[in-house]
Amino acid sequence: MNVLLASMEVTPFGKVGGLADVAGTLPKALKDLGVDIRVVMPKHLSVQRVAGELTRVLPSVEVRMPTWVSGCAVDEGRLPDSDVPIYFIEHHQYFTREGIYGPPGGAYDDNLERLSFFCRAAMAFPNALGWAPDVIHLNDWHTSLIAAYAKTWGTGAKTLFTGHNLGGAYQGTFPDSQLPMTGVDLAHPLLPKFVGNGLVNLARLGLVFADKINLVSEGYAREVESPEQGAGVYDLIIERRADVSGILNGIDYDEWSPRADKALPANFGPDDLAGKAVCKERVQERFGLPIEPNAPLIAMVTRLDAQKGLDLIAEALDRFKGFQFAVLGTGDARFESLLRQASKRADVRIWAGFDPTLARLVYAGSDMFLMPSRYEPCGLGQMIALAYGTIPIVRATGGLADTIRETGAKANGFSFEPYSSADMLAAIGRAVATYADRKAWMKLIANAFACDFSWDASAKKYVKLYEATMGKK
Image 1: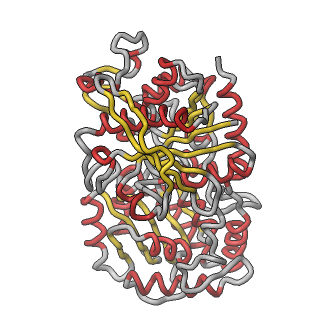
Image 2: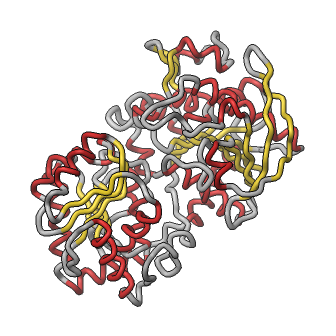
Image 3: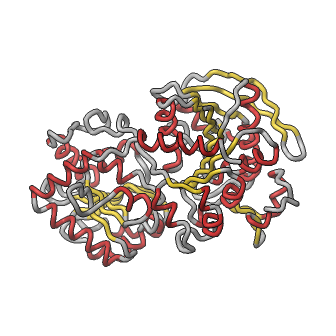
């Protein structure tokens, strides 16, 4: 089985969000299952900085745009610690830029043209290599045009569209006046399904044309059928329900291992937590919190955004008492300003920005990890926290509901369902009370370490989904 996974971002070559982590780790598990999996992404400026030596496998590939002929070069590398090939589409005008999608806080004016080019190049280069994918695995709206091209060009390749986040702000909308740039047939009978109100919606386009559709957790696949969670796309999810599935994302436990993580001042595991105490002290020190080993330390590593529950934090912050609170993240200036003001207190701190090394320390050194998301398609933070023996406190939505349970012999965290600051505070209160019970807390930590959210099980489900996609008429 030949599979080409297309993504605008892939860890470690270019990353904006969790999509990059999935694109950089799932292929390794698929390779282990015997899939001939290959990855393609643009050669962003970040690639040139981190990829090291690459092999130029195609010095020139013709890429036909709607009204002109362009071209690209293709370099080949490997995903770290694997034999998975990754191909980089080089086009200096489109991709040699500081940002993947735009400058900080913005978007490039020519993004639809850039994406159209990348999707067309991704379709063109395999033939030049003498390799043909059976399935092209598309990741979010950035690559959805491939589904339309595969259908209308009759290439023989089937397409699977994975929606990592179908929230209203993540559907890829552009003025419909730009649609000719894509080369999509303006007389296509399905056009009204993804063009309307003066906009073309690329997420909807992918949902219309892809042979199969996948969401990144079973819970999220159910939730996006509702107008609240699936605003802008829920009608298509319902319409194509027979072709929609949910497969939980996973994490790479070789990468996220407290026993081997070189970013930590001390390593640890389930049988020896002394190193976790050292990490906690270092977190308190780095954030300027009082060095109190017995004070519950709750942390967040997050984008400062309402989707991530920051509006609940804003409502409840003056009632955060009886624990220390540390936030690592950047995003909405309103929330950053609020947290800076709150940092005048002794027990609240924000580190504005993102530091991947500090993030690892926070995962390792915190007692609890807060994710009060309005919605969360999958979430990787709670899985990483569990891997470091840090107990999640989450809102029961999407992948958070699929991975965190508060009751039973395998309880591994705390959760709340109504989206309210009162319910969030109640869950935090239960966590802090349990923390005071040493025996109960040690049991939670043991359960956390016992969790297995590796890619192994999910990769097997993807193989079956690829097979189903190949058989799609």
